[in-house]
Amino acid sequence: MTLAENNVRNEIVVANDGLEALDYLFAKGRHAHRDRREVPALILLDLKLPKLGGIDVLRQVRENEYTRLVPVVILTSSSEEEDIVASLENGANSYVRKPVEFGRFVEQVQRLQVYWLLVHEPPQGRD
Image (cartoon, rainbow, N blue to C red):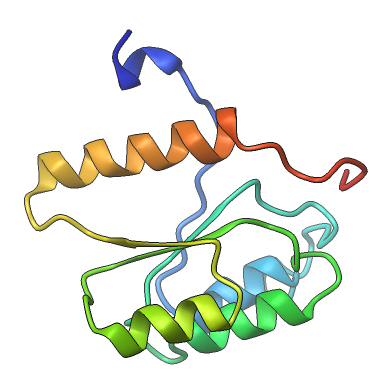
């Protein structure tokens, strides 16, 4: 079975910057209509976000009662040791460096999706 055959089907929400990500997660701004208790199954977070960086987003995710247990995978191009340490110290569940080649990037995201959405066991009673 290939990764594509796993048929993981989840809504994908893309935020263009750190502030938009927080607005979505915490039901603010243009996302104020959203029920903030409905949290994502997984957050893929880049460190180099406009307006508000990934570490700052991660800190706020971990400080919030609704999002503190959501798996956060840092998916970034940085291989700097300080970025890895800062991510893990601030509560990231995993740190993955993005492949440069697009086909490999898609494959990497599919692998993350399979693990975090099909294999990983989240705490019960989050719904």
